[in-house]
Every structure is written in C-alpha cells, then in structure tokens.
Length: 174
Length: 442
Image 1 (spheres, each protein chain N blue to C red):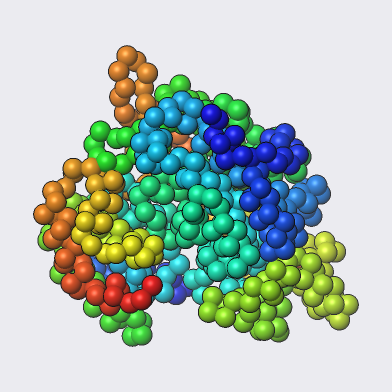
Image 2: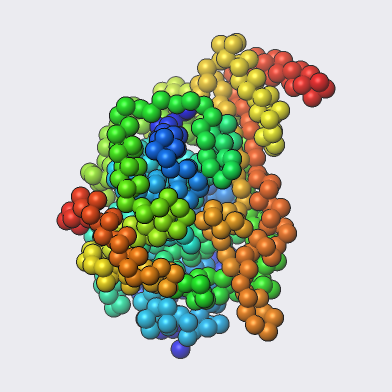
C-alpha cells in the first residue's frame, strides 16, 4: 500500500468485517464519515446525497484500490485481497469507533445506514452553523431531506443514540 | 421582476465565453480586493501552455465565468417555475441566489500557484485548496465583511458550505450548482479551456445545456431535487462526451502529463529547501498577507534563481526540456498493466531510480458518476418525462450512451524518463515489449 490513506481505507474494511459489519458500498461510506468526524485523518468531503452523506472521492479511491487488485468487490461487498497489518497508531481509533457506531445502529442494514447517516450529517451541519442541537431543529432538517420516509420516533431515537455516544463531538464550543 | 434586476447586477465585464458577465456592486468590491486579484496570477492549467501555447488564462476569468454560468443555470430553472423556487427557499430566492453567486465567484480563491500542480507538496496532509477557500471566505476580514455587508444578511459560512463541508438542507440544493456531475464549474472550464487551448474537444451546446434542468419536489420524500427534462438528454450526453474528449486530449495529453510530473518534482524539492513557505499556509497559522502575494510569479522567481544555480528540475518550468514518454497505453487491461510493470522492473534493474530518473503514471477515470444502481448512492439525476403526466426515471435508464460511457472509463498508463537517460531506457522498453508479444501470442 503506497499511501496512508489506502492503508486506513483497507484497515477500515478489514476491521468492519472482523466486527461483523459487511463492507457494502453504503456501509463504507457511512462508517468512513463517522470515523472522519471522530478524527481519523482522511481527506474526504461528504455531501448529502440520496441516502445520506456520501463522498465521490472516497468512491473513486475504492475503485482505484479495486483496480490495483488491493481489494475486490464481490456479492455487493468489499474484501481485502492483500493481507494488511492495521497500523498500531490507528488500530484503536478505527476499531473502537467502528464498535461505537455499530452499537448505535439498530440493525446493520441499508435503512439504518441511511437514517443514522443522515441524522449524523444533520447534527454536524447544525453544529457548523451554530444552530442549537434540539430535536426540533434536527427533525425539521430531516423532513426537508426525507419527507415522511421515517417516523418521528425513529428519527428521535437516532438523534438520542448518536448524541448519547458522541457528546464530545457536539458539546464543544463552535 | 427578473432576478438579475432584483439583485441589481448592473456592472458588466466582457468575456470571450459569455459575452458579458454581470455583477453587483458588492461582487465588484470583492473582485477588486488584492486577495481576489491574486487569481489573475494563478494559471488555470499550470504548464499546459507548454503544449497549447495560448493556454495562458487564469483562475480569475474562470471564477467570473463560474459565477455567470451558475447564474445562467439558476435563472433558466427559476424562469420555468418560480413558484417552486419561492417554496423551496422560503420566499427568499433573492438571498439564496446571492449566496450561490458569492460561492461561485469565490470557489477557487484558495487555489495554490499553478492550480493543482503543487498542492499536495505544499499543503498539510489532508488539506486541500477548498479548505483554504473556506478559511478565506470565513476569516479573511476583507472578504467576510463584504459578504456580511450584503443587505440580505448573509453569513460567510452559508457561502463556504456550498464549497466544502456540511451544509443545511436549503443550501444543499445550491451545492449541486457548484460541485456535482453537471455543475457550473465544469460547464465553464470545458468551454474556457477549449477556447484558450484552441481545441474543439470541450465544446458543447451551452445555450441548450443551461435549459436542461428543472427543480422538483420529489414525491418519495421531502427533498427538492434538480432533475433533467427528457428532451434534454441529448445535450447532457453531448456535455459528457465533450468532457471525455477534453480529458483525453488536454488533461491526459502525452506531453502535458510529463510537465505535470516535472512540476510536481520541482515543487517537492523547492518546499523541502524552503519549509517556511509551507509553515505560512497551515490552517492553524495561516498568513493571509503572505498568501495574497503567493502566486505563480513567486514560484517562477524561485525557479529562475534555481535554474541559474544549476538546479536540475527548474529547466522544465521554462520549457527548456521535457520528460520523454517511454511508453504510453490508452487501455489499462491486464496485459498492458503487466507490460508497464515489466518496463518499470527492467528500468530498476538497470539502475534507474523511480521518481528521479523515471515516472510511472496510471489513471483510470470514469467520464461520469451517474449511476443506475440506487445502492451506490452516486450522483443520480432523475428524468422528468413529458408525456401527459410526469414520471421519474433515472438518467442512465434513459440513455444508452451514458450507460456505455460508464463502462468505458478513460484510461492512460505511461512511463516517462528524463531526457539524459532516454536512449538507455529504450532497451528496457524493448525487452518488455518482446515479453508482451510473447504473452499475446501464447
């Protein structure tokens, strides 16, 4: 692996799998977004797309890794081809945060990734604009993106679980 | 009343692409700032002028062009259905139109000298010029105060969020105008770069293109989305084909890639010898005054000095020589990848040093990221059909050509060698070529 970025990407895929999370395209996008916001040094900018936060650069880098036979995409999941050692310096940062995010999600499925990824993005957006992090504000944004696709209790639960496990991210002064 | 009149865009700049670019008084004040005037000294295409000699245009013209193009697209959509815009933007379309314009105008203000050429070797890890742009918009006193002084009560963060980072839902609609598959940035540089390079490759029917889009509230959810009218699919295809050919003939021109590599190499050496340059561009200790005067001429000044002192890589900056393409392939299939790897192996066995004596370049680039599979979460545009009732399909489903383009990425693989060692390198290539023929015949 030539770059630190490639190493971190492959380490994430490996540790997701070891922790029982199939590395599908949507799963990787949402987990990498979460890891990025928790401080993992990756160069991705995420925008809100149809199913939540998404980075086209991340998608491109995964394609490059696939192209160089470092990873493969089979049965809608990524697998590592070349065995890698996760750098000690980043092992806890990746593994512990994968577990935190996994714990938050009600299921490891497309719906949970979309819902929790979107709520997490909205929380970060409101923080950026110094808008108070109340459920009312979050739900208003959420409905703006998703309409009535998810119920209010579902969105509320997502907000409470994300906030509960990540107060360090959202309680700091803007 | 027309939106341009409502925002009082009454100052005009002549432009070879659009005829005129219309600006408000506040936008004109921003343009007059030293930190924006700096863009006149940042070349749009780095050393491409060594290949296409008229490619001397700068980020200044491009920035004004993106403002005009984003405005044209927005206005075309607004004129079709102003009611939905008023609904989407809480009856405050004027404010959001201005935010879009500020973002379009300032989207490249944080670019490094020679545009993308030296960014990696100059900025901190994981920091891109967009982060610098964000910093300037939000923290440079001259720019941020002018944005705040706008009568629409605009927060600089609203502007910067269209360029990088998270944004709120209403601004998210505008983000696609600045950075997406079919955005104003691409729509401008394709035409502008083609004009100044003197090529036809990036040209497409712009007048038709800006009318291809519409704003719709999706039935499936709350989101407002930019959609494409069914009758506009041919112009979208033409746009993406133009992009394909432009990339193939300009961006991945065989000699231009060599200049990119030599510029990169010169820059790495330069900044290793002059670490104070990097220190003034960290996000934590960013020196706005230094940045205002840090441009192409700064690098050229160093390069002139270095050339006169015998530094090796500076000669390429002045086109006194160029890296020689030892081999170029336009298809990165398995056979060609092995072939290039074998050339590389042979060169190393003959004592050539990678990234000193030779450079290995590989790129595989999809011409678009519009995708039919919803799970991939790509930049999917819905298509509005006009057949009595409106239906929504995906653009890929409605275009065989775009589906085929997705299957055929633009690919380039190349090995470049410094001119002094080119003749010796040729035999390394010859041996690898023989192996390739053997494989093909096996």
